[in-house]
Length: 374
Image (tube, rainbow, N blue to C red):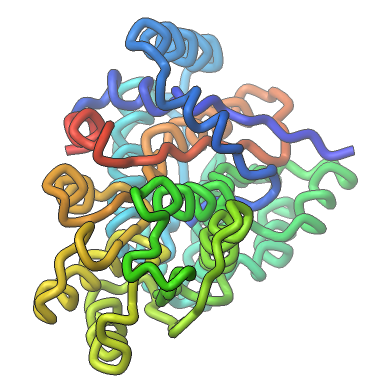
């Protein structure tokens, strides 16, 4: 039976306290609204306690000298806003907290090309890295990549883009040193939908008894996009709200594409559009540009939600220019990924799946979240 370790939502507090310097998994059940309310009401004392506990666990994990260990890291593409935050925190945490030398951490850009990334992985193997942390261009390539790494005796930590459950089960069944660290995309979609349900009119701005929405999707082959799309709407229907989908269109996580999709939708449907769901904040920022250009006002005659809690998006929530976003905890995920790599290097057992909770970001807590992510 596959074991799943879930890192608490307050792992984000750890990252914030440690750093103070936003597309995740699908194997756990989405957190309920009641659990969400409880997480949002966590006191500063509880957050500090959780942070100290996680920091202590990390310290205990590093019981070996990491200074001579070589790490190969490949990110699916460097110009992704969220993964830029992620890799920055990953490198910071590994060098400042875990004792790795910066020159021993090789971080490469997969450039959105699986063949390019596979070549990078082969080069990591040839150069004799001790562990890999991989954000795959295509999660479907995990079996091939896992076998390459396993044959070379190199543990691998997959991040952000989750392999399917059959592959994760294989790791346990065949005793392969591979694990996934991410967040449950169903949870992020649920939180988006709840943010609409929690508005004064439950998203039904024109009072016609249904919520008419457009969906700006990331990459439809990516599990995060699939689940955010499904579960954002499911949160509305579970609340007994009738919905009408006007447009579902692929935006590839890109701001410019998000702007164009929403611009075209507003031209076609006008005031009929009550809610704009975006699978990430980059596309939501583009959507906001189109909404403002069309003379619409968020939270008055249209609602807009995203995912990732990019600094600009959270500021927009503070300013009332976005209805909400969902914090995709890059601090907690990056630190957990590094901790799992250290466990492998220390010869410890690692669960095949390690999840970090999302955090709902609304007008009530956006200012607090902004202080922590900016």
